[in-house]
Length: 126
Image (cartoon, rainbow, N blue to C red; front, top):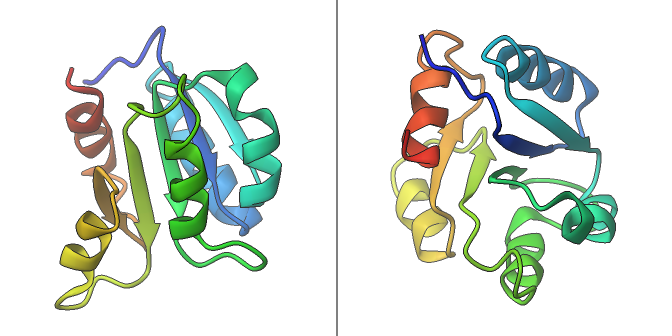
């Protein structure tokens, strides 16, 4: 079983049920979880949070995940933090677009709760 003790993981998604699910899954593996319901909200607090991993929804109102990622990469303290796209778009070509957009990887929604901890571990390089 993966243990994410000492790891701070940020989850940014505009859907409350997704935030609750990911929080429960990550806390079950002892991660410290910080959530934000919008890209703007997350950008306002990210420097103070200093996460080890960021899970970022692609489709959000106001500011999509690509724009949030672009702004994150401009913050020196966060620039090298792995950012993983959360997306319901897991069709042919989407993976390439996400990776070309600068994300470290992606996790398809709906999430496979059994595979999720191993996916997170791979992005944390545990």
